[in-house]
Every structure is written in structure tokens, then in C-alpha cells.
Length: 277
Image (cartoon, rainbow, N blue to C red; front, side, top):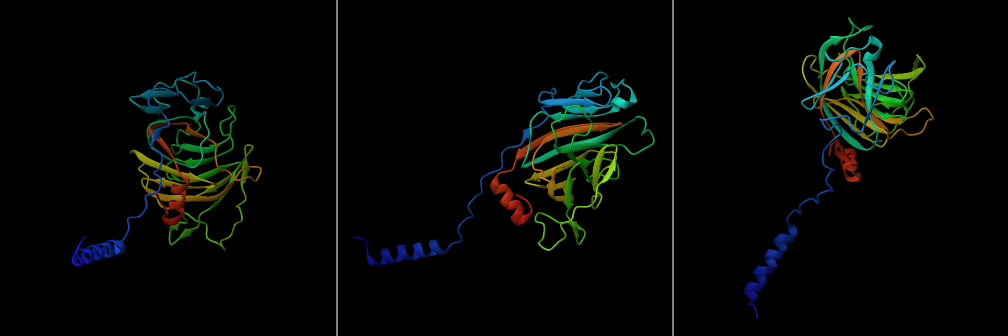
């Protein structure tokens, strides 16, 4: 039988151990990053070119050492076909998307003298016969990288709080009135401008899109520049999912490292608690 001294020492050790801070329970890890564009071919993607339809007749898209090159020297088409997009065949919701892009030098009519333009479309509708199905655009235009354009959709933009876009929770008491869209060319558009400029006009830019439930954050080179809440579709229903598209708009553009990972319920809870996960 252990001595009284040993028993007291054991009891003291147990007491100390009981009062030590316990390690936080790890939340379920995020799903691993996976390639949305595989770097080899366009498996899993559809194409639309203005005036051409669902085929690349004029070499608008080329894959060069894992990089998507749009409207480069291989493009021989009419100017109208310099507008188009690649879109996923699958729907996506509750995810973190990351990619790099940079502009090339070529520009096409009617934007030969205008700012170079591209974009990331998300929560996009299923239609394959138009340049802009209903969606949200993460704008890549020079000087406007991070803007959000709501295409036949609506959102509440996160107001600036001390210069920083509101994230990740829309405060009670803040106005919840949608801005009136501008109707042009059969499309109703809201345009939500970005805050702060972190873009590199002539270099690679890293773009992050955090989209979960009916809200989203746009990040440019690691900084939040725009946030959206209470996104709704044209039928006033919450907008939470859809296809993802990479667009070209009359300007040469390079895209690489197009990656995505799902956000778990635990990830979303952490975002709501601390702004990240």
C-alpha cells in the first residue's frame, strides 16, 4: 500500500494538472485545396463567346505551362468574339476560392483605348447562351479590382467602418434597403465600389473570394476590399450557390493557380466569430 507521503504527492500532482489550461478543441479542418482548373485542359468547363456560342473557333483560350492565356497571340477572331467566359459545369456554394491573374498587352475594339478588363463571375445561373447569365461579378478592371457588379441580382454592401468594409456580420440597426439597380442592355446592375487599392496593374494579383450562405468577401492581394450581405436573385430569394466563371472582356489576360476549398460549418462559425478560419 503506498505511503501517505506518496498519496499526498499524487494528489498534489492531480490538483495541478486539473488547474492547467486545457488545449482548445480543434475544430473540424477545412477541406483541402483542390484545383478548379487542372492546368492541362478544359475538362469540367463550358465556354461562351459573344457571336460565336459555345465553341472557341478563333483561339481565344490557350493553356501554356498550366496558365490560362486568354486573347493572346493565338486569337484570330472578330472583335466581338473577344468577349466571353469559361464556366464550371458544377454548382458551388460555401467555399474559399483563390487564383492569380495579370493583364497582357493586347486590347480589342471597342476598348482599344480603354482600361483592361476581366473578372470572376460567381453564383452564376445555368444558361449557356449568353455572355452574362444572372450572377455576381468580382471585377478585375484596371482601377476597379474588387468592385462587385450584381447582374440581375442584389446585395447589401458592407459599409465602411473606419475605412474597413464591414465583415463578417451585418450589424443590427444598419439600413437594409437595397440600392436601386441601373437598367441597361436588358440587365439590371447594382455596382458596389471597392475600398482601398492593392492591385498591381502590370504584375500578378492574388484574388480571394470567400462566399458562404448569402454573403461574400472580395480580397485583393490579401486585403478585404469589398463585402456583400443578403444577396438575392431576381426572384428575391437568397443567392447562395451557382456556377463559377472566368471572363475575358476585350483584353488579354493570364490566369493561374485557380484553387477552391469547401467551408465547413465549423469554418463558417469561426469566420463569424473572428473574421477568418
